[in-house]
Length: 191
Image (cartoon, rainbow, N blue to C red; front, side):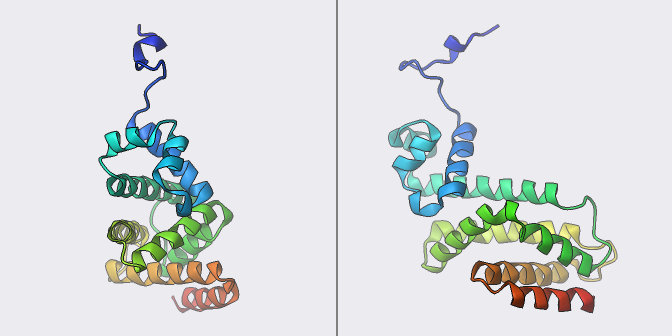
């Protein structure tokens, strides 16, 4: 049996592992956004120093890439919990289920963060662009797995659904939910 003192570092604190630090930093970023994502606030959120973050992650770019990947996994897990299990019965049901879930209040922190990632990617920040591209590819695969079993072109249908959902989320973010609602209703009934 090990006791707590066996895991202490020389300062007397329990050392944090990478996953614990990522979990704490992810919670910080979801609450405060990326504008407060410099090393000191992230280190404080993780219960360590900025030098120890660099020690564990190599550099700020590697830290941000890993943190964004961690957040993407958390978002995927939240989607899995929010949606019915199995495949949708139709493309319209797939679109409706994903749009209804992701436009709900539990996903608001993820979406606020997402638009900050998109903004940084559009400014040419390669770390954010790479992470955003990976997040989109992961989401696309996730949507494709939710497509109806008999879908003739699951990849194309997933691209269509993902584009509509992302567009609706962007319209929500700028206060134009009425436009998003009308477009989604047309797309769902066209199925």
